[in-house]
Length: 126
Image (cartoon, rainbow, N blue to C red):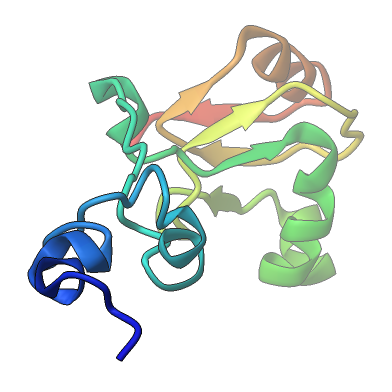
């Protein structure tokens, strides 16, 4: 009782459509609640964004790293600080250094090289 004609309670019209029909219209709340990934926006990444980032260190941080690795005696002795073996690929120029250090690194900025050589140190290419 209560259905009127037989066709009013039969087939997919009474359910709002077949399958996932109405996911952007009359079943939007269900989509938001249970199917959050249904309409993904994936976007685009250029190949340059997929390259691994080079680990960097600033000139001002070299003194603390040298004390930790070479100890105080090694710094006065003028031993070399091998940054490539530590996984650091580039030295940047922020900060200052007062102790001469011989640094082994793949890349270095011009200002960082100037500051290291000004302090009496040198750059060793790996």
